[in-house]
Amino acid sequence: MTRRHFLFSTAALSLAALAPFGLGRGSANAAQGNFPVSRTEEEWRAMLSDLEYKVMREEGTERAFSSPLHDLKTPGTYVCRGCDQALYSSEHKFDSGTGWPSYWQAIDDAAVETKPDRSFFMVRTECHCSNCGSHLGHIFEDGPEPTGLRHCINGVSLVFREASA
Image 1 (tube, rainbow, N blue to C red):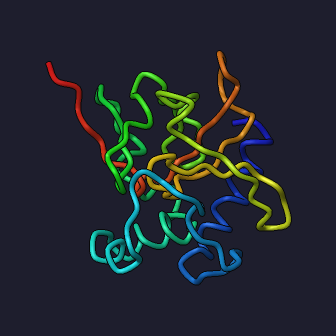
Image 2: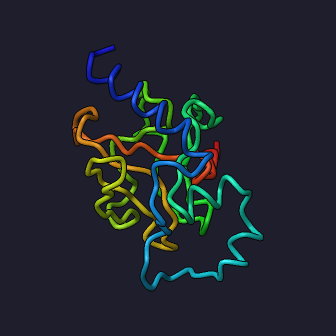
């Protein structure tokens, strides 16, 4: 583990520990705009658990190492929990050591939209589903080749679809 990964992991775990208490975030919401899939807040609340809603609609973060998708190695596709849009392939998944499912690219660049996130006294690149606006996670420039990117994604924002034999 590099010093950078150690420092990042320590900071991320500390911030994630505060997430259930609503600390560290402003009054953020899912991406704003017109999306092909839209629902009322009541509809979102009815279809999502409290944690899924907090992450996907209020831009929260799940606890590190809490997602069953983190260690999953089965071939398949990770789709958006909010709209079933295909987002990530198991072929692009890697173990970043950060505690969240990580991918070096999306299935299609158009499937993931980004915006600046200026919380926690830093600027990061936040990513959302382009089909429904749900918050997915963040993209960092410390991933493996060939892209050098790390899509650090909350597992609760995804549903895994196993590849058919």
